[in-house]
Image 1 (tube, rainbow, N blue to C red):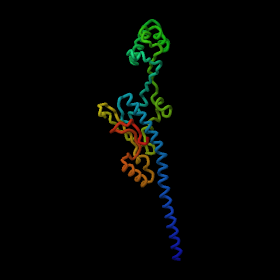
Image 2: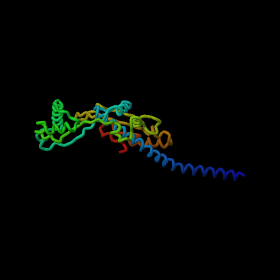
Image 3: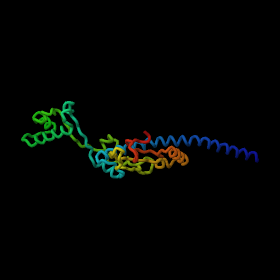
Image 4: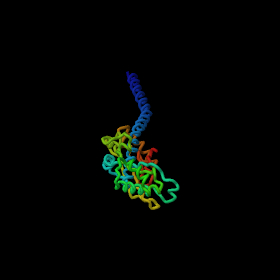
Length: 251
């Protein structure tokens, strides 16, 4: 009877040992597979967030750490684009004509034409008139040169239909984090050694945000490894201490 009990216990112990051996191999593999899959979604949102911040900087000359303001910016501010037709020749450029000067000449010509008796049904008709009749436009060789600023929907322009006003706020949230937002810091007063002001941005998603429901020991090991390598334990873009063109640490 004792031998039977011994054999049963030995069998259970063997099964348990085999189970733990298998799990010691399977658990890290499953952890890394899940991590890789989740990080594709986190990276996608970080890239979308970077796109929004870059546009905010283009319009305002700075980045913002206020993510609510960033979403409002995307929803309410139009995207301005310049439609270009024609180009200045080398001869015109050598003579001192610049894009800015050419646009100013055309704007003055169009304003002058509008003050006249003739009515124009469209902007195309107005341009055609000044190209053929305005003396300065003709003398500067600006026939066919045109620059028009148009306004487009910011979200549609930046994200090509992937987001809209209703779901654009998704880009500020870290996937698999129960609604937590990216950690964002800005340094709008950074100045290079040459005295050039370069606003800096950093947006982060620590491992603990999007992997906290996975194996605890594997998460601890991953964080420990990245910290020992002096890496940020998670995914991030940019750096508030040194310019890096808002690169992601996975790139």
